[in-house]
Amino acid sequence: MPVIFITMMLSQAAFAGLGSKIDTLSKDRQILSAKKLNVVSHNQYTVHTMKSGSSTINYYADSNDMVFAVTWRGLAHPDLSVILDSNFGLYQSAVSAMKAQKTHSGFRGQRHFRVASNTLVVQKAGHMRDWRGIAYDSSLIPSGVSLNELK
Image (cartoon, rainbow, N blue to C red; front, side, top):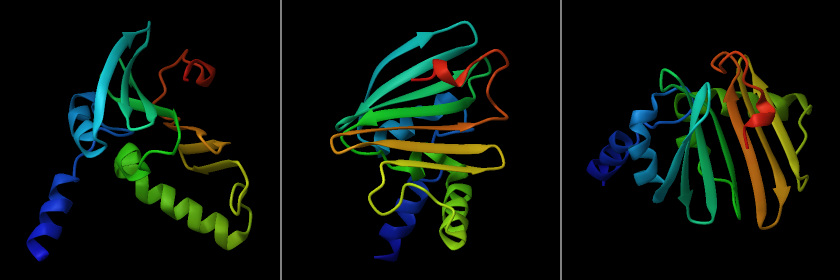
């Protein structure tokens, strides 16, 4: 049993999530059992789209191939530990702090949720069978790129 646990931890050690290089995206595809759909180039970034079960996930990478944002839409939210990569701990801490301060929105059946910590922002919204979200690092967004462009 310990060998299986260690193997699982090592296999999940380097995702292509937020703040990582896009060339490690194949690890996300394996973990999320996703299929790569396409890559679309824009002036200041590229969008790498993949399909995981009922969700479509878009990874936005700048000209240096650094993932600065991830969006998703589908029947359920994808595994945020994969998408947020090394930022997942910050996300968990921010959620815990919001719960402790009772300043949160989006818990207990509400349909909108937003958490921000330093430069990390995660927003989730929707309703049954139509969930969507965005996660981004505001310090990595290329100048001239608007969050409204990211869908």
